[in-house]
Image (cartoon, protein in one colour):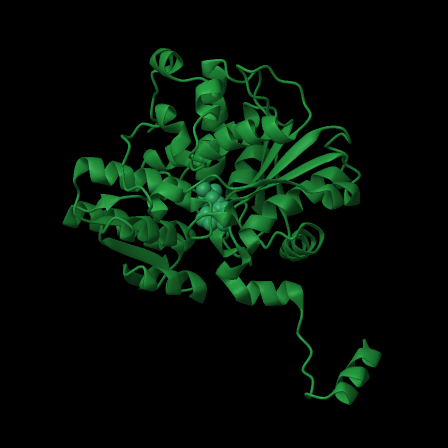
Length: 392
Ligand SMILES: Cc1ncc(COP(=O)(O)O)c(C=O)c1O
């Protein structure tokens, strides 16, 4: 299902100029383009989702022989992942509907986002995550007082159980690729990219329009983030607020490549695949929003590629060491894709690229330690320190 907007009415009510005048930096500045009422709840995390920074990453750009690389750091959301965007809109919708309980299946981040946004307005949540979900993500859920079920199966099993439970108990279900309001939250990243890119790049724009980068790189599991971002750019194009769509590139882990495989075959038939990668958030056997995810690349002139777990670990190191952005494996996957695409000559040096960084590295410290190596133990004396330093 897709939410259809009334563009003619939006055009009468809002413009890049009127939105630019809003002081609220969160995603709620785009309220005229959102299919929910203002949820109120001022001063809460629900009200603070989005508004994440877009950084220039010149050192990474020079590593890749590119000139214009930007990182959109969505690890800076209230619960530290991109998923806060979707959950904010879903919780606003749940408040409108007056539901008593919200539920979701998740590899971890969507659940933490739902539990956090819901906790901020006192709405109970029931969460289903695979038993393999990283401890930090489960800890977040429990602290947000969600009722948490560790499903003894895969994310795909958790997904199906959530749908059955929602039907049985009348809970409002946020499942990715099932609830159309998630993509409406995720599209706000596209709005921010356009608005912020116009502000910080030197590319020409008029007051009544925003401009967009040439490329946007997105890591893909279920395919709802890339679909939502594509939808956001399409909304802006339909409104005449941008002149063209950026090319959207989907990056999957080689161990979980179902959307890539459909794209590579040239069809939209999403077939069950392996789901085995260090990037737990994008470890998905049967992507639930795969068809729209394939279209996001196809309709914008983008493409799909896969990267190995080693390439993901290298990307985590590069992001941290060369741009001070701390990304979880699934988030670094998008950058690993850019590294590969740039090395293969698929991006021209003077083209501009935004890489979506979708989650913070603290979400999965075990993987981070694999990428970062070990700290050095030292006895508390200068002599011991000197000896250790001499060994480095
Ligand atoms: C950090 C992170 N990056 C990327 C994704 C992929 O999003 P999608 O499953 O919508 O493709 C997820 C999904 O859980 C995520 O948590």
